[in-house]
Length: 456
Image 1 (tube, one colour):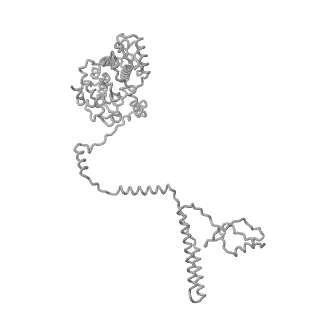
Image 2 (cartoon, rainbow, N blue to C red; image 1 turned 180 degrees about the horizontal axis):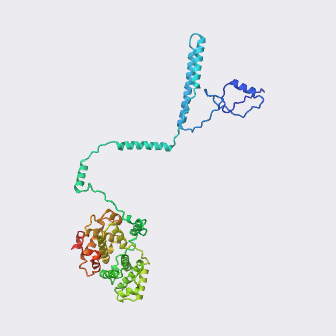
Image 3 (cartoon, rainbow, N blue to C red; image 1 turned 30 degrees about the vertical axis):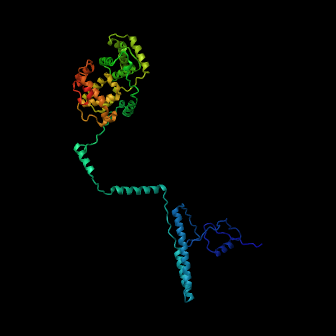
């Protein structure tokens, strides 16, 4: 069997120059001492114009569509150059005349081609942008187009309808009416830690949600021995007791809330109605006051109609029926907030409390929730004192009621104001006729709010 000579392959990175180079290397490395590992498997390509002795640095580029297209274009350009070379050689061979001259021309053409090919091509740096950058560029282009459209001057065509509307608003004074500013009523209390400015809005939202849970229902139909007049007499007397003991307003409103809730769940004999009022006052005083009145004081003020033990037994009975629930949003809770939202003076504040106490004394207001009675008292007081504007955006925001929603309840309070001077129950009227209270009870009521049904 014939043996074939083993031809060593050039090392990785060396260009294949010619057969003579291989023969010299075979002669030098015949002894096997310069033998190297397999480095070329036929994947090296000789590039003209690049020195084969110097290893070229490998350039790794990410394979993108643009890069693939560039490689394809380079391959097509190389193929076209090869074709042009063949055409030039064919033309030189066909030139008539001296053969030596033709050979010289062909040699000159080859040298020119070598010079052209040997010139290194400039390396192109391909920047590959991510998809996010492309999307951002698209968004920027779209924004520019939109901005150009917005900036493009267009003449606004004024129609007849728009002209008439503008004239009507101008005639009514609506065209130049500025938007009312909402006042921050808690700004003055920002440094007062007891005011709880951070939580006050959430607190009143909660009060609005739960006020109907502690709201007494219409209970007179279930009370065989008690009527609305008896209740009014009891409340009138308790307001007088409240003044004599100099209790806080919170105590008064909580007392009335306890009485109404207890009468809603239990029928009470007429002879025990005052006892219910005394026990409710004792409970509210313990809850709200620092120094509440003693049981014996309440027994004495009731002209000893009940004993010490009877007051305590009734107190326990009321707590059991109410399931020990005394933390409820009363009228006063909302009055304090809504008065603050009205940015009042002292006269306005006294008028609001006067109308509110007239309202809670009469059973007719039980059909309205506490927040509506409080808001209606503020609205009716503003109308009585001719405030302008009566119902501001600040009040609308904090009360949650519009002016139209308060008409019925405010009309009832104004009606009670108009009848207060001639009513037999004079405690509230006398209390607010005092100059210390601004004598607001003596002011004429806002007759514009009186409903037609109550004027007759």
